Image 1 (cartoon, rainbow, N blue to C red):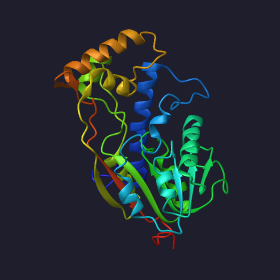
Image 2 (cartoon, rainbow, N blue to C red):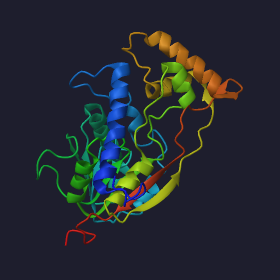
Image 3 (cartoon, helix red, strand yellow):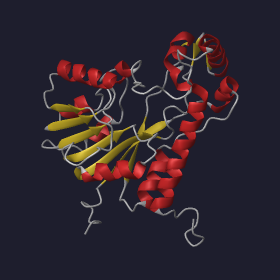
Image 4 (spheres, rainbow, N blue to C red):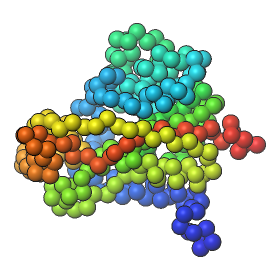
Length: 294
């Protein structure tokens, strides 16, 4: 970092490098806990159904729909089970859903069929595309909750901008969705969690790149206390307590004990063991549309 720039004036290269460092540190840390996943492993196979439309609140949908125009084509990058793609398809002319997970694509196809939406095209591909012309351009390129673990953020954003005629949009939480309660994590794994980048790091990168960003915070619904077994079953994945671990049963019992103690809400109920508080819709015109390419 140049002394003249100062700590709050990172260049685009410095901001992207800092983002990448956080992602790689988290990846190395998790790999050391779990071991590397085998080739072809579908990370989302066990939880893909949770990402269908209607399975969870989507408070970001309203501000996203406010950005849409009836004749638009939207790219939904990392479309998951369709919780954004399907309702967007009711308002715009076409949605191109880009999704590499087979389990997620299956859920999306079923959700689109159930909703009677024939204007959703699903593409089996990781982003960015490996070549030109493989994904059509759209009016808006959306990436909802997919950027936290992207180590080459510059290439990802550049491809978004190349495929967006009017606007790029991102949904991001204030903390990455897999961020645990620090004390609970320490007691479970005996070390400090290495957090992924999230909203503030992404906005810092975009500002360092000279983008004209608009950030609209979105309040997330209050999480009502629920029975202990429900919460443990839903959030064990976030604490990397998963079948296949050598000590899975012992680790799961320990996680249950820690949640009961740290998240007790009385009456036999517990709160969700998460730290994220709100999300935001970040939007900006791509460089060319904003005049930066002239």
